[in-house]
Image (cartoon, rainbow, N blue to C red; front, top):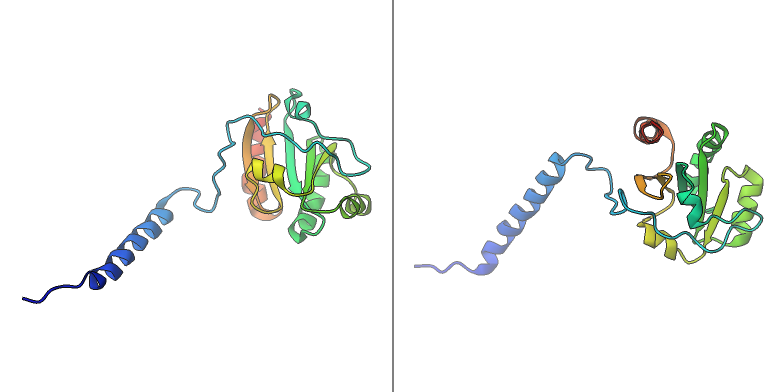
Length: 178
């Protein structure tokens, strides 16, 4: 009787496990959306420094009784530049938009806001990206909707542009105001 080597069984077992993971991922709702452990929780702390020439964002700003949009951005980030007109539109429509700049320099961040207009009522400056990590931000831009009591209601990964912005972010924002 021939013995079957464990090395001969291992590849089909690995293949079956991967196939199972792929199938599970395909049938899961919102498979393109990254989960956020902060949705439904209090917002983490904001940076203790502002972008030069702007008003300092504080933790109290997120607990002011008003819904706040918190946008993580960087001057060197092309998708951040693409979403900038929509941030200006949101601000012009009366939404409270706060910006947290991270992994940038003060000079570049303040120059960017001076050159392209500042949509933020207040900012935070996160040089090393530690606050971004605390918020679970993976890469700029990422945007959060925070209720007036400081509860994170929604996380949006990527630039606020296109049909995904119109079909997911704007309805979530409208829902928070009802």
